[in-house]
Image (cartoon, rainbow, N blue to C red; front, side, top):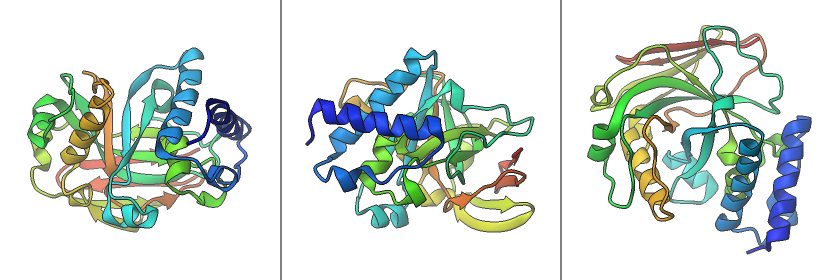
Length: 260
């Protein structure tokens, strides 16, 4: 563990890196004593700064849901970050990448909750019952850590590497993914990676249940109306200004985003 003053100092490093659009070395290199609890507190410090500046929490994102990513990070559970209203751009017009350090895109299922989920004891069935609808989406991830040299502590502290959520135009009932759905990511009309909803803890609703239970340990619910990104169905791919990115789901249509 590290002390409160060091947490504040590390949060300041990440804040400055984001505002200056300039990456920094991994936090763990200078603070080898950094632990998971420290990293979540660092994340919370910067989220509170955003709220103090007028932003609102509109949901959460879940990361490290695939076996490959968990193996790479040396963990056996996911992690999570916060979604703010400032992170949900209008995808009907070109989206700017200005202000992002080293952006990538992932293909995901977003759950929009119609009723509150409060752990512990939340199951996949509870998630599907609570969901107002699901949306195919793209998550724009970013890292303020140079060259994406992230470990678990760095990504958690950096809001689980979240940057923006690009929601699809059509809503679907949650049971539309009762069976695995193939997912494809295209950049400039070229297929760059493929996956499945089954790559997200076996089913995306299982990831949402995990989050509800994890937050429930601290008395924090998933609120009605909030968006929950359930985790990537594909590997993350670099994106650049001028790219047209499309996420296609079997039976759920597509999300198409142009980047300025």
